[in-house]
Length: 321
Ligand code: GRF
Image (tube, rainbow, N blue to C red):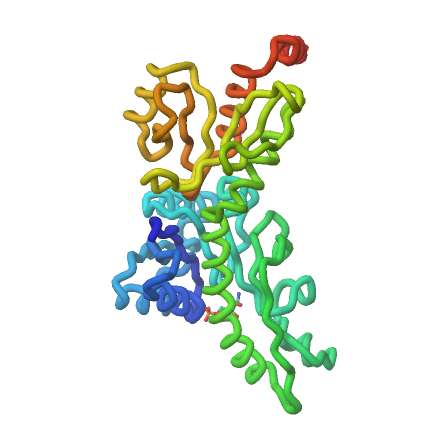
């Protein structure tokens, strides 16, 4: 199995969702592992459970540190743990916008309502008060506005006659535990899915002038120039010829650069087998934390190497403005 995605979990209290994630990660096929549990309250009960499960725990106190130092410390600890993603699980602090920006699209949260209904607290009381027939829970991407980011998945839970806030919360919690691990697994796997990678590369490639999609020996590729005389500047590479990675092949400046990059940064670059002494270099894309601006830069460079002079001239002229 490919390397598992590394997840840090933030809690403030009992940590039952955190426990559900820890147990899910024990599954042999689970695509994520929990590398750190931390939060804003050093005495949170969930931290003891995580420790007993031999998960790394950091006990830090938002009350002692103050908001700015707390979130700076949190960011540092999460980075030191090597986490690629953050899962909020009953973390009762509003995460500042600059922190979220640094982890853009990498923080998920679970919320005990069918968002966009009932953001914030007291969701079950509101559902019962409004005589809703269904309540439920949502997992969403965290954006700067509280409980507002794109919803990834939801589970509906029927409100039963005679339900109190407590009985409803207890049943929704059962649904939460299943929804969170399943949704997190799907979310981290998405980035290793060839179709998702192809879509992202294609969006970037087709944003360049006079480009079109064309397969190259069965692999998705993108060419610049006319239908008949266009040249490939990007080809998707999906675990061919003993190479484990899914990546994109782009043109580099030549054998020296190819040798240097593949030797210095083997986690990022590879030499595509069966492309002989060509100038194609592979960029690995089935890993977390791909810097897509960097990939876009490579695509542009590759495009500039093979594009007809009339197009590169135009591009250079545009850059001087
Ligand atoms: C859960 O209901 C979760 O949806 C909400 O806070 C609660 C945390 O419970 N965000 P636990 O700490 O995971 O048991």
